[in-house]
Length: 125
Image (cartoon, rainbow, N blue to C red; front, side, top):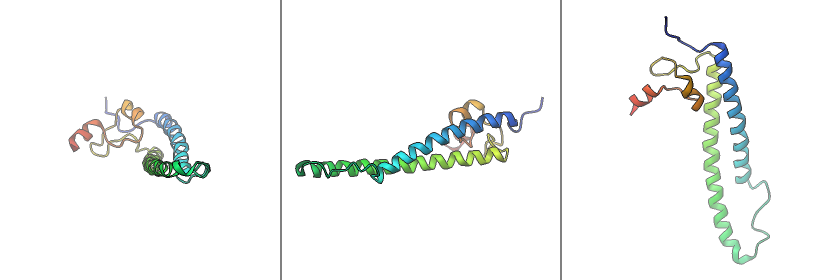
């Protein structure tokens, strides 16, 4: 029997749904991080006593920096998921870009934006 060279349209649709769900969740989380960084909830230190204001401002700055980093990582994840959706449309989704073989479904379910099989990833080390 010939080795399968791509996933069927039904399988690609299954992955598209999985990726779209992850993308929707990632977008919500990204908006939350951005909201915190931009302080759009209006919760700052204006209503605290001056003694604690300096401490709170320092902690707030650290929290905002961390949220900024998390937002940046989340945006990269979103871009990877969007690229995976493009590969689904092109019917190239799930094909390892190094070996040209199909990436196992188990790996794609765990890391739906994967472009390398485990074999290829281990070769890169």
